[in-house]
Length: 293
Image (cartoon, rainbow, N blue to C red; front, side, top):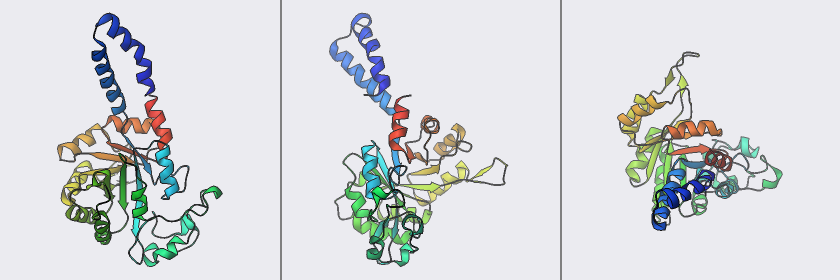
């Protein structure tokens, strides 16, 4: 039970018994409403590449830890190997996380699988392999969400569709995300029942100008043109405010999430603006901080 609800129980009980004189069933109903209101204040907490502050990013270890830290969702990055396997890795090559320079798109899956993706983070994670999308999908518990970020162009959509068409995955648990609008459009054509968000960061038009692109109107235009269900935005408080969100809403953008937010004050700011989700490297810390508000 959230701390705020727990601290409110004495007041609720007193009011029920001595002021309102409601029945126990009425009090219980009020308690359920109070609980749902409290939990609704915390948006979906999405673990960025898993619990990547504590575990090696984009590994099953990081995703398992995210669930242990009470994340509502995980986010992972996916590319195609040379032989067409959908693998979970952020960079176009393996140098940063494996210490070996291999281009993912030019390397067969078996070779990628031989590398160590965990030792760079900590010796205790030595031997963590590069997981496939199928393996990550299998790790998602019932009732949880999975943000599948596609780091390639539309060529990944056909193998993704074949995998999802096997019917073993609850498609309602998925959100496909990508910076490439053609990839988003292809996903909406081939997988219309799967939610998709277009992703965008921001750039200042001129250093110190305070003017950032894309504007809310530009975002709305792109979302409409690629058929996305919403947008995932870099969480910049100097760019996204109530007027920005209102423009998005007025122009048909139904929902948005933000990334990558590790500070509670920033998370509260975007939650108050109506973000459906907050992507973070620290899911456990951020949830406990928000619920302690």
